[in-house]
Length: 300
Image 1: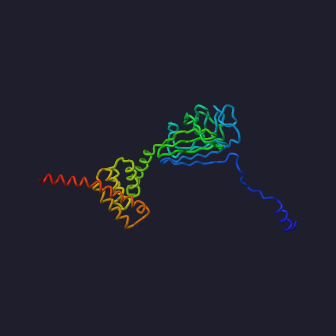
Image 2: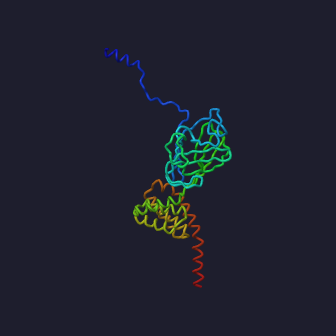
Image 3: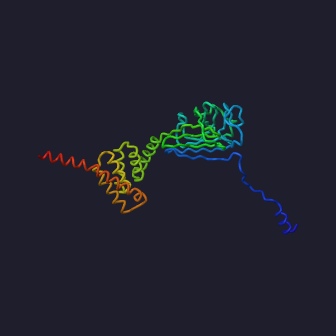
């Protein structure tokens, strides 16, 4: 066969391609940070398509039977730190998420065998936590949906929603303890790192805890590098300790240092610092006046 004939023949043969096609239950991923803990959920979303769900003898997730809580592979639930699941403490790691639907109360399960297809290989002995949750009514969802809402810095709800049913599983993390442990470790490992010293002082300030420790960390940061951020942090700590008169010149110096080398932080916080200085001056004035009056009376 000539080269021209071979090329003509090959043009008639369709090329094999890995063409992507829509899935009956499309994959979805939920990523949500709660405090310093990252939660990740990977699952597939089945559709109702006119079928009944969450009922006796229903085709989809019938009552009192183990459900993979999604479609295809078992739903994967991952947490980056220790957390509580329905009040049960669970180590950081990956888990399979299962559930047993019921009209009165669902059982929602975390199982340590996270890499399993469906529920055929499920073993109750591998459960790490079981939560009993009362379902609530919800807006209609044609496709099964998992969300983590609402969220605070230490709590959240894992919501399993389908049809007109929602199952809210409470989640919680020890954000303050985790943060302080990490910051203390960072300070111990990098005692001369200005950013670490400042962020630790700032976190203690935000929580109103160990303010004397926070002040010493801010002072150390300033000694290493006098910056707008470290000075402003120190001024706020002094003010919170009730040392407003001492805080004012430190805050004013923060503005001076920031103006000499303005950056994003200085530009953003400058109006806030100026307002805080005015408030501190107003707060300190009566104290100063009272002290002056007391000195005059003593001299008489």
